[in-house]
Each structure stands twice: as C-alpha cells, then as structure tokens.
Amino acid sequence: GASPVQNIGAYGSEAKDTIESVYVLDTKKDEYVTLSNSECKFSYRNSLFKEDPKRYIVISVTFRLNKKGKLNLDYKDVKDYFIFKKNGEPSLKQMREAIIEIRKRKLPEVKDYGTAGSFFKNVVVSASKAQELVSKYPEMILHPVNDKKVKVPVAWILDNLCGFRGVKKGNVGTYKNQALVIINLGDATAIEIIALAQKMVDGVFEKTGIEIFPEVEYVE
Image 1: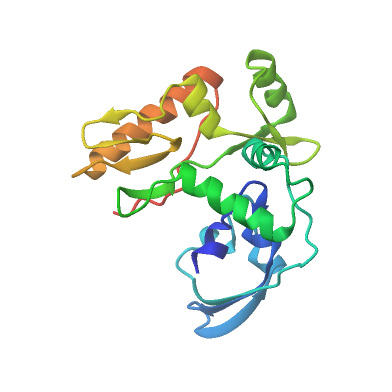
Image 2 (image 1 turned 135 degrees about the vertical axis):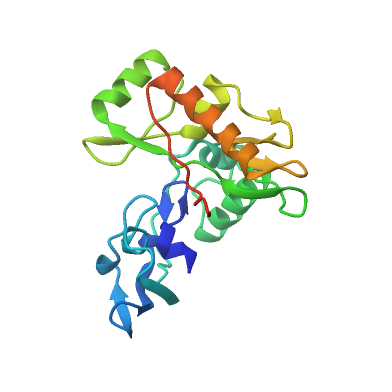
C-alpha cells in the first residue's frame, strides 16, 4: 500500500511507471473505488494519497509489467555495475539482479540497525540552478527530468560536499556506505534523529543553497 502513496522509486524508475490502478476505500464517500493511474496524480515521491492523507485507505494495487521495458542505465552505480560485469546490454533479469545487489551494498540490514532507508528526497531544481551547481561542482552528476527541471543527487552532496557518510552523533548516525541513510546505533531518541537530520539539511543548504526535505513521515 505504501508504494502508490509515496510513488516509491530508485535509479530512474518509479512505482507510477507500472501501476495500472489502485483499489481504495474512500472514507469521505464511504465506498470502495478503483482509481486509474492518472487519477492517482503521481509525481516525484507524491500522489493523491499524500495530498489528502486521511481520505483514502489503499486496499490493493494492480501492476502491469512490461516484458520489453526500456532499461535506464543513466545512473552511475548501474552503469559501473555492468561495465565491471562486462555483460553488454543487460536483460530485464540482469537489471533486476543488479539493482538488488547495489541496494544491498548501500542499505543496511534492518536486523543490524533501525532505519527507514533513504531519509531525504532528491531535489528537483530549475535548469539554471542546475547549471550553477555544475559550474561550481563539475563532478556532480545531474539527471534531467524534462527541458526545464533537473534532479539533484542529495546523497552525493551529503557524502562528497558535506562529509556526512558514516558519521556518529550519540546514538544516531549515517550508514557507512550511504550518507542518505540515517541509522539507530542503539537507543536513539526522536530528538537525536531530528537533530542530525537538521544538521544535514543545514549542511546541504550551506554548500548548495538548496533546501532538502525528509522522505520519511514524522509521527507525533
């Protein structure tokens, strides 16, 4: 149920790419309805369900997969994986295996650390802001969304510009292989987690002038 709510995604693909419909309980009308992909109003890490969070309860999701789907090899980790493997043009099966292996390397096992995974969303900026960033940091790899918008890699900024990979602050820290992942090192409190997250927000803004936002939801 969380996949359509958050429109989860990674490496250039999102849940909306394969979701055909979502069956929900509309608590406002007190009836079950099937919403088409377009009716779900999907966008980057957003949907109708996040815009009106108390109205819909997701019952089931229908996915339609494409056996001949176009593969996205634009992301550095994916590209490097297949260069190392020397497999040439990968199949869908090989792409799946690659993503699983890359994710296992970057994300901790939940049995080892408490974590919500990627803590912050990537940021979509204007083409002019993207050009400003590339001029200042030529090694930064950006991902165009369209002619006017560009996605900025927050994990890369946190790691390479802010030095947040593998840091420890009391009972909370970031994962050794991925600065975007905040982990509980033992008995971390919400206050400690929020404090570290704010330091990361401030660090990114200081280096780039970009404000980043949590992908996780705070529950009070």
